[in-house]
Image (cartoon, rainbow, N blue to C red; front, side, top):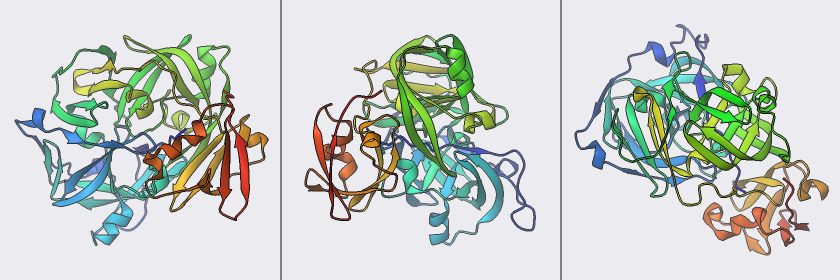
Length: 400
């Protein structure tokens, strides 16, 4: 089971006084001028999925090629602070932001031109914040999160099966599928929709392509759904401000507008979690959306979902009870899932794994068959070489 971290940043309404003169949040700055090319329909942007299920691609900022993540849960696009500092870009104070795990300080840099597929923005700027590698589950961090400010006025067509997306004029309908309501929230300026889970209609749900999880709901929403017979465990998520441990289970069905989805992984945030803090009912993430051809067109008020082959198949689930992060030549245990084989065997957060059945952890580990061991066949015993030279054996089992 891949670690499914979260990249979600919602800008706070009031700026924090980080320096003199007072900080100006991105909403108070000149937005720049957007232009969508007449041939935008043919300007597909290829992407790959990070180990955390996020859409990773290349684009340009002021003529330089950057690695970016498409993140509709971000109000204003965010440039990595380390990149801005390495490029010696002047960083102005930009206020503060609410993010998974707490609050973060943000800055702001002016840009001349930002280009993404058939879209070009001249002028304006980017927010600046720390973008840790752990938030994508990769050993290497990305340079940029592309948020609502770049994409919200257009139709965003995401073809997960072909690993490509494009921006179209709002109102286009390039494929047929099931429709669901979609809008931009007036206060947080992110994509929002709704979900029906059991007895509960949950809204607003942030539609967040930067969230590698499937569906996340509040504790109150989970109780209101009144589901029974769903076995649960725990999982960890990472945001820009830290980590959060949530309850996780697989529900038999839920609805997003006209679409009925089956065998869906749902995370339940703790009371007072991030969704509670921003007044949302939860999030619809890329872990769910990747099962569909997706059109996000908030200006037209709709999201369109066309199921791909196997959309309703049960999701991959951990049989080890370990969620790990990839580091150079090793794996670090980030969370031991409640009730799993690893918990019963005494594993702890921070344990370091250097080999799996004798095979070393390579640079491309996350994309190799070796990485599937933690969700392997129940009953299989895996030999794990620890980085201190010791060896542990772990027998896989189904537990949620």
